[in-house]
Amino acid sequence: MEFTTFKKTGILILSSALFGLTGCGNDGSTSGEDSGSNQKAEETETTDVEEKDYPSTVTIGTASQGGAYYLIGGGLGNLLEENLDVSSNVEATGGPIHNLQLLNSGDSQLGMVTTGPLAEAYSGEGDWLEEQFDGIRVAFPMYYTPFHWWSREETDATSLQDLQDQRVGVGPSGGTSGTYAPMIHEILGLNTDDVQAGIGDLASQMLDRQLDYIGFAGGLPTPSVTEIEAQADINIFGIEGEDRDKVMEEMDYFDTYTISSDTYESLEEDIESIAMYNFGVVNEEASEEFVYDLVKAYHENIDQMISTHSALGEAEDLEAILKNQQYPMHPGAIRYYEENDIDLPEEVYPE
Image (cartoon, rainbow, N blue to C red; front, side, top):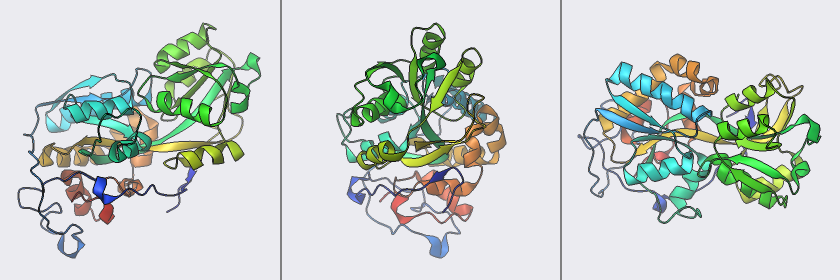
């Protein structure tokens, strides 16, 4: 499968033994009445998963204010209220890792995550984990989150190597950039002093000349970058060549990504970088009917969601769910995509 903005570099293969077990729908099937020969999951004995009732209100885990997650969370809240009569609490969080923790503890019912933390949750190998999170289920596709860095123009910094020994804002603790930008800096031996804070706070610090460099991962365009470049001259750059190869060898859940020159006023040409994909996720215990209705409303009102953030244009085609080739999906989501003739890979069916 080819996409215009990235080159697929491989699929992280996880053992099916890492996937949590979940029950099927009320009729013992995850594929609806017309699944026929398309049924991928053989009937197996399952563990007891207590399905929650259809909710009247949900908490949505997003990220720091000023980022794409927070804007999209507001859009999801409106979507739920208008189409499902479900109220929501859109919670500003530390980002994907924090969202996974909130889902795992039951303190939220819907969250947004990138593939890096999701892979670590299932493998149980992340430094942030006290236990394996194998009860997370993918519900719907979102968009790619590319990494990019920017500096005040007077610093003359135009590449990652120019960040050597510098103080760099990296986003909030628990967020994608706040977690993985420092890892990228360490892999490249940059010896940076990484500052973890919300992107809105970091943008204010840059405009106040308290911070000269920021690295961030978010849906494009990142609102805070647009805000900064409207008030200051900045250089925007990504990662490519040997630096990119070295990082992707260490973290194989990244894909290559090209940031188009029309993304920001400050860009004169396309820049090369890396990216993780984003998914909307729920807990395995979420009501099957609720998740089905959520996914259905999401896709049937995708234009409304795109209006909250243009990055969601990447989810306009239902086949965007096929960006997920290995993480288990919720039965409610599976039922919706099967009903719409999406041929899901066997690996996404929870046993």
